[in-house]
Amino acid sequence: MNKNSSIFKTIGLMITLLCAMTGCESNIVFQDAATLAESSWYKKDIVSFEYDAQDTTSLYNVIIDIRNEADYPYKNFWLFVHSTSPQGIDYSDTLECVLADNFGRWIGKSSGSLYALPVLFLSNTKFPQKGIYHFDLIQGMRSDTLKGIHEIGIRIEKAEAKQ
Image (cartoon, rainbow, N blue to C red; front, side, top):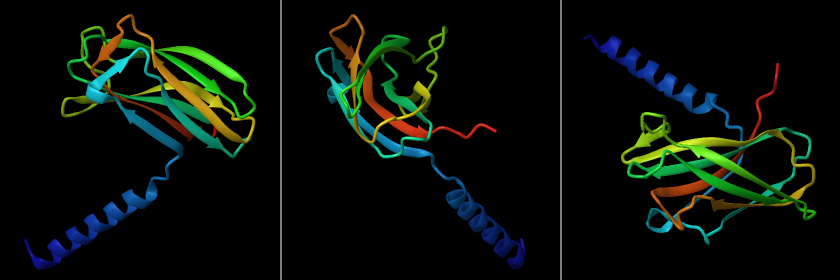
């Protein structure tokens, strides 16, 4: 390989990396997660998040981010989501989070023995009032202790504009 060829490859790689780093604009406006002690989620433990909404006109997706361990004993889990608006309006829902397919293969992306999976909770929703929105997440399985859920989080991102 000649010297010029090596320089062009290096420059090409640098340009590609620069474009990749600056070309991807994130739609995420809020993201937070809680790591569960000993990868165990007790029924009595409520995981809470607060989002300070300032934009009342845009559409957003609310996503629950889950990280489970490879030895999690079930293919899914049930989640109770309770939210409160700045004016005290309550909203509650139950969400099934499917973590594995019918053959027991984890659906999420793996990193070692952990699997990460985003689960869409609300799609194309607005936050109609400015202020703090509270989100409480409660595991809804029959077991008092849910072993193998390593982390639970919430992500709010601007919805893609429809064309």
